[in-house]
Length: 271
Ligand code: KIV
Image (cartoon, rainbow, N blue to C red):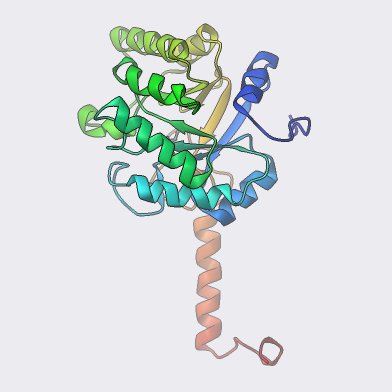
């Protein structure tokens, strides 16, 4: 389906409308101005300033080290680039788990200092108070269930979540609760497709999947993964649209060769 030009600016309400009409929602991550500009120009619906910036931009093994200040820096760079997409920013690990007051203060800093449109938090009923308090301040909240990378040391592995009956039932219940608390949408990461489909059919808010199959209301991928800039990460759900690692390597090698051979710059490339 081509980009729906009818939507000039995407809001949380647009996403709900899209779900109601059966139009799939496309979401990608961005952490900087240039990438966000290209993604927004292509017609993406939602840009996620994910805490995956911790891995992708900073080279950390997990999402845990990234700070609130760093997330605000990334988010404000993205915001300066966009004209259409809804921009959602992850509350990083340590910025909301202590209590709801801390969660609200972190969310306010993100909204005020970056100009973002919404925040995303990982978790279910254990973060009820934080979600409700953030919403009271008028800040839209996106939920995130399934594989929640900020809890990687609790899980011990990045394997598919909610394969067992108990965990699946708990996830479905948490999805219902997130809707009840007032979340405008929900990310489901790396869970069985059948369960994700059931969640999307159960709740009225849009459900956006990553490794959750095609029965949900939209899809999200980490941009650097789908562009093939990262090589070491190859889960089954990842579709690579380019192999930028190889293309960029070739360009860099050509440049190095041209500099070394004194081919660059030539007479036309100087003043
Ligand atoms: O941080 C991130 O990029 C995310 C997506 C994988 C959903 O949370």
